[in-house]
Amino acid sequence: MRLIKVEHTYKIYKNGTTAIADLSVSIDKGEFVFVIGPTGSGKSTFIKMLYREEKPTNGQVIVGGIDVAKLRNSKVYKLRRKLGVVFQDFKLLPKLTVYENVAFALETLGLPNSEIRPKVLKAIDSVGLKEKTRNLPNELSGGEQQRVAIARAIVNDPKLLICDEPTGNLDPETSKEIMNILEKINQESDTTIIMATHDKELVNKMKKRVLAFENGVLVSDTKKGSYKVHESTKDIKKKRS
Amino acid sequence: MKALRILRRSVRDSFKSIFRNLPLSMASIICITITLILVSLSLFLSYNVRQITKTLEHELTVVVYLKKDVTENQKKEIENDLKTMDNIDEYRIKSKEEFKSEMQKESEDLATAFESLEGDNPLLDSIIVKVKDVSDLKETAEKLRKYDFVQSAEYGEGMVENIIGIFDAISIGTAGIVIALVVVTSFLISNTIKITIFSRKTQIEIKRLVGASNVAIKLPFVFEGFILGIFGSILPILLSIYGYTILYNETHGYLFTRIITLVPPFPFVFIVSFILVAIGSIVGMIGSWLSVRKHLKI
Image (cartoon, rainbow over all chains, first blue to last red; front, side, top):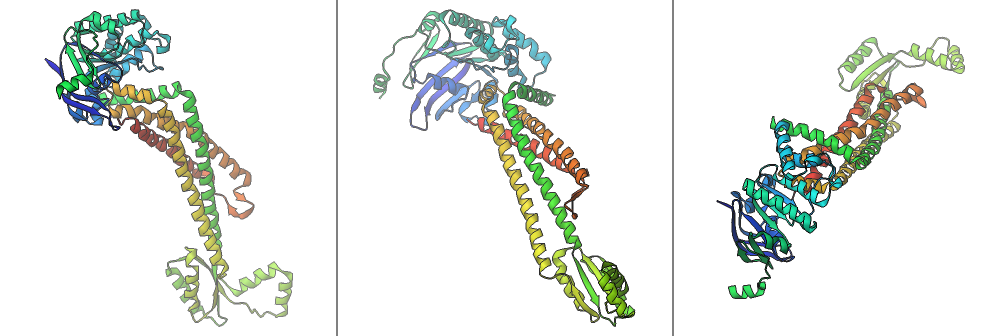
């Protein structure tokens, strides 16, 4: 079942930079997809378009049945409630405890406390932080903070989990732990995971679908792929023309 | 139920946020306090100046001198007309005998002079007229001059017009100061809140990321602005109530002279307090709403 459909999409910034050029790709429910590419390749823009942090200039981006390009600013929350987002810098609220950080995603939906509590505890438990519910983010290690961010992202049982370089700030051992958690989420709850990363080792080891970007162009889309050095975009553009 | 829960959580979060961001909250409260004290002072000043000008204006009268040969019927005629005239607040007939005894009391020289007249009274009967609107003083005097049996109607021409002009200028000036201060206060309060909110840009961003609707994001900030406004108005209100009451009691309600009377403190101080709390809280709410809105645009 198709969850994401991107068709002939362009993202051109006001200064004229083309971040994404003629992108067409689709992702099914339950897939685990790596998005790779060097800095400035367009992978982050692609990821940001999926949760409507960026609006496509042209083309269609449909996520869970919602046309992101046509989504009004005041209705963005409708899309965001269907997905979870994890960032490299965790984006936790520093003055809220682990429990509060995870709970407030549900509180904003207006759920009753009786419903929030078991969901939050389950999410925290699933990332192995049961003992740290009352800690503040600055009392946790980087890996633990990222796990809180994952718990917050999955607490609402999203169909899609978007991870923007979630291991970028972590050491290899902690990165492995995070990847194990993400894989568990993917397998146990059939959540689609799209993860942008620079980590070659991780990508090569996991053998998942890989979307490779260069200069705003999707240069390869491989099932059970690896982190390869691709042809330069110039050559591809030449071939296309 | 859902809306109520969001509302309840917004109030809870706004209190939490105030205490968790205490230094910035205190800065906002102090800023609101200082500006509201200024507004309070200007309100007291302006209202009292208006009161004083009103009192002084009330003292302005038209004195109508009736001719020596005026008959009782003519006196009744002008009295009846005064009763029907729109601009007349009150009037009092002062007979020449009353006038004479007043003058005798006032000065011994005059008393001696009256004695030398051997019972003859050269003074005229008069009517002292107070008007509702002093700007029509001249017009009223002119109307009264038209009677055949009226010798003259005087109201201190020239000087009175000058005084009225000055009073009007003072009234407009103080009202202008109040309005200007309210505008400046609104600007200052909303700017302070803007800074408070700017420091929590990330918080707004994260809330949006986890799927909070714009209203759900704005509400805690709006409550926070409201609460900061209320907290900021506490000291100005206490100063207004106690400060003004003490000033009034110490001066017995008069400033320098009995003509300059102060407005009695009750319910005046409560009206001022209400205005202060309204400015603080409403500006706080609107300031927050607008500031958050800015961060919700992508």
